[in-house]
Length: 61
Image (cartoon, rainbow, N blue to C red; front, side, top):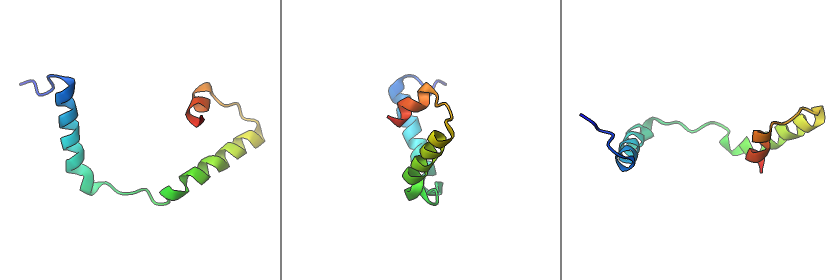
């Protein structure tokens, strides 16, 4: 039996699976501080003159 006939069907199965597991997902503790962590890491990288990959530059923009 082929349950994955097209993209629309895949999206419905994925949505169904996510709705099923949603009650068991946990929030990351300290998630509010992630932007501050990112800035601190960027400052440390610049301070140490660590080369940044092109992909990381695109993500940061």
